[in-house]
Length: 540
Image (tube, rainbow, N blue to C red; front, side):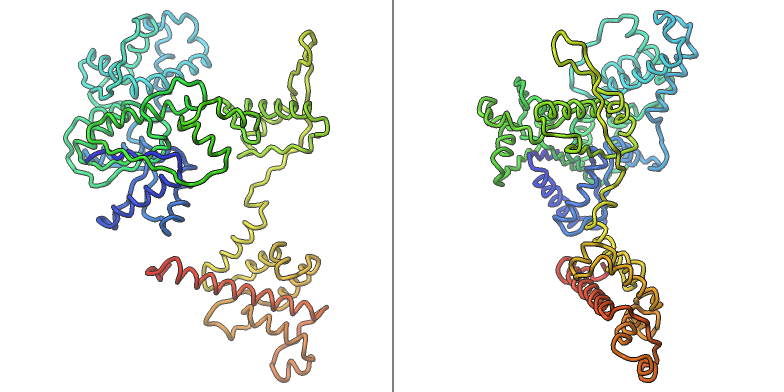
């Protein structure tokens, strides 16, 4: 099987292509779980929603990160038992602990002598172990020929699959130290000590079992040369269909521009490596949509179809800006500087004109307090001393699902529509929503009295098949309605119900209209789900 390389600057088009490929595969293997490799948890959530929107149903899909997907694949390929909830190989933290242990135990050894007293400080040793952990992972992924050479010196065989030329550096003390440490910690047996070593050993072996799955890689921002070599090998040796969906123009030549196009160089590297693989099928999806002028200019600029001097008209537009910062503290510093700059440019602005939205207040609270309370150093003139400018602020820790009346209303109504059983508390939550109050013309000051009236009626639920139960919401509202038009004696004599005291006859009318509206909308929604969206799936 070959690798199918799909590129586009429209995520919606790429997702539609993914949906079509999933549908084709399901026609041949309807019960097979399809594996999709995603770059992040957010992309997994986005794909779940949009695949369901495109195809009407999103089920039996498995979203994994690349290393986890390859680990599962090679275990199955080698006929080994695999437990996704138990690590077969050490994590990055475990690898760092091994390196830190080696550094502490070999404090006075020949290999670490050139470091002097550096390792006597535990924080410094910990920092060095973290750096070495990152470097060794990079060597395994992008300089696998180094790992192969180090293993050969120990009489072990760890093959290299990367096609990237990686000349060896000068053999100074630090390089020799890295080599000796890796050999003693990770090359002390014939069995692989890291996950990448396991991949490199297994990829050259013949499969004991032939996996019948396909592999979909969706919008990965970067792929190391070792991973590219592994994908090429399993597509040929195992006849595995591989689909690579890339948010890219399809260009395979790097640009020398200093403009926005340079950000596409990692994607160009992936594209150039993929198209160089014999038998690769390339497919570029052209976007035929019409976009606003400025967005269209940005897309054309990213494609390289227009040059920088053609977009000078848009250079003064700062309505949307993207900042890239290494930490939350630097993010808040950038925000603080921008606020002070805007207030200096426009004297009519006040601090109340700015709102800063963050994803997680627990993460950003220390940064906000450090920067806004500590202040920003400003120098207004060249020869003037800098002054510290503090920014007054207030923190509000709320989530969108708590603050949005529409979200709460939809979720409360979904609880009512999700089964044949309606709880009184779900009905009260819906009644308290100001959006619904406005729709059915209920004054907010009357809501408390309406709630009290529902509680007085003694209702608890509404369930089909139990129409004669006195605790049914429908029967309770019937008693309230009759209490507004019948005397106490007539209500008991003719209908055998005890009258419910009412402060206003309008309350019974409001509750009746509210309940009838809820029942009608619920009926319409259930009918729509059965006849419009899920034909052939009556159980859903």
